[in-house]
Image (tube, rainbow, N blue to C red; front, side):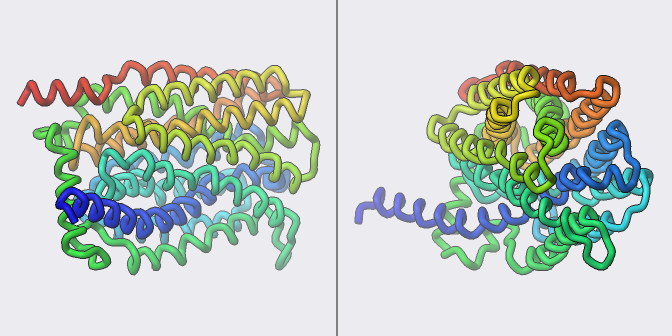
Length: 435
């Protein structure tokens, strides 16, 4: 076998081993995390009545998660880069699992606020930590596809959470209402997986006993090649000075407004739109996530094949804005409105894999970890603004149309702003000329 063929065979074998070892498990972790984050939207169908929670109060509680979440994002990302992904992710899952289960026993609005805030603090660092962790294993050329497969957890979690939550809403075990069992039953898996993380995850390729020595050497060399053009851009402080990173923060804020504004209110919108029972509503509300899953996988694959990130992200967000705006005019027609919600899901979720492959194009090392934490931390404040504004507007107008128009606007702004980022080709050219 020629040296070139031998190198290609080694590359294919190593990439396959890494993908099968890491992606399914991290996907499972994120599915469980996201279910615990968004199941409140399904629980609301009965919880609001039991606890006398207003629409505006629900919007505050749904979004207050992201206030606690944002406080510890950057330290969490740095701990994964400089300490241990395995230990930090395990700690996060155990803590949030306990708090998620405890939400099944809340008695009033203030406890609802407090538990959502604590849940956000407990989960802080999980998502950016896993993104940093993936950058330790996947080359830049493979990263959008890897992120797409990992982030397929977002639509998958909603697809699973909908029917499961719909079933749980109908039970009254041990005298507890079904919405309480949503939090209890969907919180326990995080505790179990928190212990499994310690046994299964490997921090870096150099410690991977499940790879052959030549496979460890190959992936280490490839990852080093990716960062050569970013020499001098690895100190954590670079993230705060880099204009591209700061623009990514703003873009993600607007994208997250639409992302969570729709996700956390969709079951209530579908309930009002259709008048169906809770189980039927949860089935209908899961449909946009099938479209989201298809778009994330399709755009992640296309983005890696072409090595283009900006236009993939921008067009996806603009499509999402069109879907959201169209649904404003069809709120009295179930089938057309659901079709437009599916279009919105396709767009506002599909951009994520391409978007999260961007930070490592501008900074590396501790700076990349800080950038991911910074983008996710401040960007996720949109997770408070989006749900709160929809709840506030619903309380004032008694309909969802103005809230949907607001979410369409934030998706459009994000889609246009992303085109202000420089292409990776121009970034590399500047780095080379500077060196």
